[in-house]
Length: 361
Image (tube, rainbow, N blue to C red; front, side):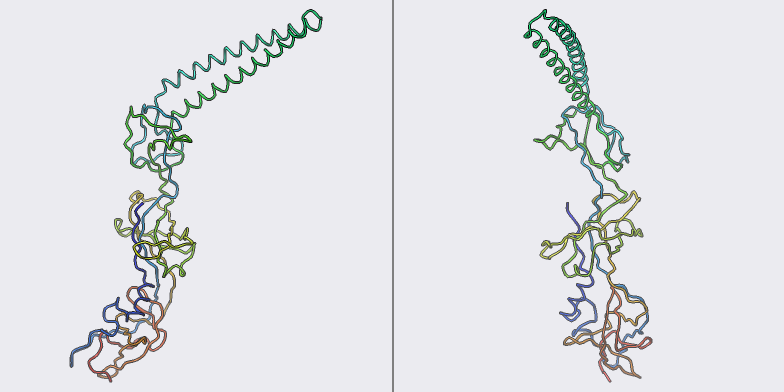
């Protein structure tokens, strides 16, 4: 299956920014624009807010319970009862194969069983009579032993014919194919008269249709190696869809691969996100967006990311002092897509410049 490409996570963006002067954000780094001499600098205030740092991914929806429906026997389709897009319950009739030959086999097997039963009863009567004569020494031992063997052979033949009848009945039952579990019938092109091959030890058989339980779903995605140490199985996740505006579903990380693979020149870890949905608009194969919160800071001083500059590995801002601005070093914490936490260097309410001032106090 083709899966969505993983988004570049915010953690990775910040890591790249540390190495490259925060080049991913406008106004950051050594090349940030400088205000024209005498021009007004745009300023913002340091505010107190909650910041949540996340790992963001894209992937593809797959059902947790999914079955390829195959026939156990070869035959010709008599009738298709489930069309694509139909919801079925466990045990619902999906496909019927032609039963003509199978019905004939069952009737023939029933006659063979009846004949074997009659033969067994006759052999038993002959044995009882011969045993009585043998006990009275009216027949030789050889004739008695032959009657005993004939009785046992007749009993064995009866059991064999019974087994053949059960096998014929089982094949007849297999001509009726039912849903193994509740779910949505996916695409198929079945038609009456089509010949299908049964699944055996030497043949994979014809896939008749697919049934997917759409109540419990997964998003199959990949996590960048930069972020893998920040996530764990069981962590909550939010699932949304570009095609279903406003719908957000709560989920959790179900599995994390213990080993990385290379995908698009990036080392990533295959991951499954579990979520529940009863929304009929969600179908297998559609693209999904996943947001995994990895850290949160509540009620902390924060500024717009573009207001923080980097030069030779140190971070600083330009704080308004009187009619001008003063450069001040800061210590930053976590960030989201807009704001970065200020752990040291600024207080709420202070005004800082979004551009590098032409004149610094």
